[in-house]
Length: 154
Image (cartoon, rainbow, N blue to C red; front, side, top):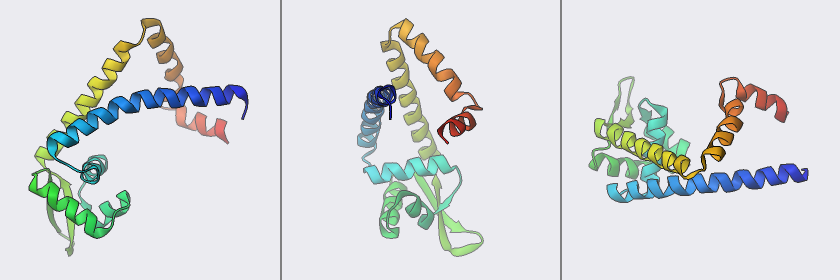
C-alpha cells in the first residue's frame, strides 16, 4: 500500500470514528430510554432493515444469536410492545416476528435522531470543508458508483 493510500485510510478511519461516535451516542441514549439491551436493539434494527416478518430462527441467524437468545429478545421486545409475533400461515410450527406499529414509530424516531446528529456534524464543519466533502462524495454515492468502485478494486 502506498503512502498516499495509508494516509487516505487513516483519514477515512478518523472520519468514520467521528461520525460513529455521534451515532453510537444517539443509539445508546435510545437504548437506555427504551430499557433495551444491545442484542434487543440489534433485533429491532434487523427487523427494520428486512421490512417483512422474519422467522425467529432466521433472525437469530442474521444476528449470530442462539435460537434461545433470539427468542428471549423477542419476548422482551413483545413485552415492550415493539414487535408482533404470529404463526406462519404456511407452517404453524414457525413463529414470525415483525415490528409493531409502536416499533416502527420508535425506529423512525431513532432514524430521525440519527439524521439530526448528521445535520449537527455537517453544521460543525466549515462551509468550505463541507463543500469539498460534498464534491468528493458525489461521484462515490451516485447510483453507478458501486460498479465503478468494484472495477477499480479488482
